Length: 90
Image (cartoon, rainbow, N blue to C red; front, side, top):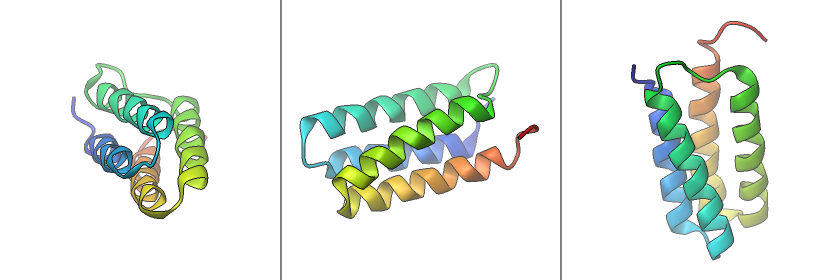
């Protein structure tokens, strides 16, 4: 089952990684992108808690890097928020 919003978030994070100014930020963003891609196609979708952890990490990196990285990270966060609106629970 494809979860388009998570795929969009992963793509935005790939763009953010390309714009990152240092290797650590790039690697962290690539890791988040890969994990969201996996969640987008997994048999069972992520819950609110898992997505909140991703949001926290992405926000932290965006705050540290700023600029284009933050812009792409914000796009990713918007996509994650959109997906979370479809989930039951919190």
